[in-house]
Image 1 (tube, rainbow, N blue to C red):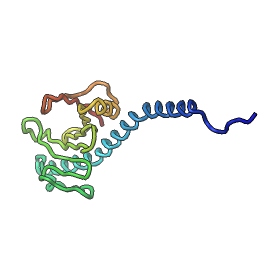
Image 2 (tube, one colour):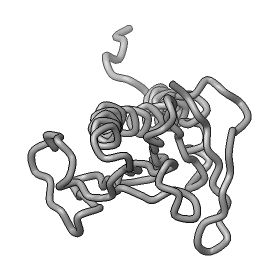
Image 3 (cartoon, rainbow, N blue to C red):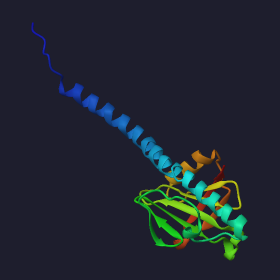
Image 4 (tube, rainbow, N blue to C red):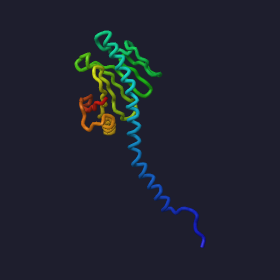
Length: 170
């Protein structure tokens, strides 16, 4: 009796089903890893902006909201919409005045222009960063992962009544 050298339809369907299940499990983790990487690459830029702001503060007694006042090399490909905003191919950074115009709580704020990545912020007078989630559950998970915390340190209500929560980390 001669055996068939091919696969049966059932065997092929089982293999396709197993691959589908593995893909369904792996895809969300892959997406989270990509968004976390995009967010983490903003930290060196935020640290450089903060260092330049602190040098400016020591020389002038106040923080500036103008990138042109800072002694900082921006990554190649940057374009400036205004003096307080710098836009790159895939992310935007801006200098913001603190709460109620208090200069001592000024900050640099960067966000990825693609997808549901969280926003990253660095207050100049503080040593820590803040990861702002709230755009999606995935952004919240990334902020929790980056900060190592399960509960947020801050929350704010943005436009449209969307509550955004922040996780601080060093």
